[in-house]
Amino acid sequence: MKRILIIDDEADIREIARMSLKITKKWDVLTAASGDEGLAIALKEPLDAILLDVIMPEVDGLTTLKNLNTNPATQHIPVLLLTATVKAATREQYAELGAKAILLKPFD
Image (cartoon, rainbow, N blue to C red; front, side, top):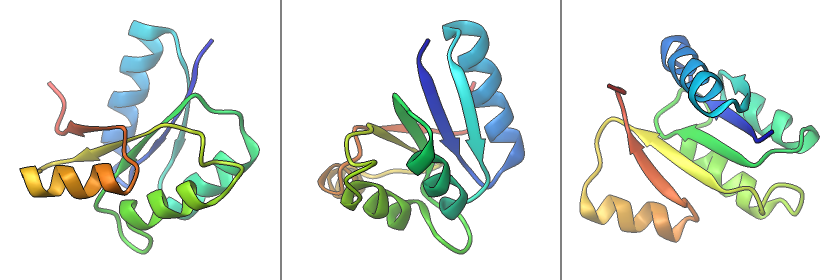
């Protein structure tokens, strides 16, 4: 069974994504409400992927992405960014930072 971590400060987004992945893909889904909490989980749990919100208070998604990519224990985990808006230049910046994909929210 695949295991994914959702890092988002919005509880409703975490829950919608968790339910969708659990029901449709049968994935084991972990959640975190902040970048720091997500990094702590990623360091101790085996993960197949991370869904990471870009805009969060305190430690934002891009800082969390950099922290994940510079840590040998987590740098192999593919990270998909969640954002409400994205432009072509922003997509390039996210890709340069190591994001594997960008997903727009809210979800349908």
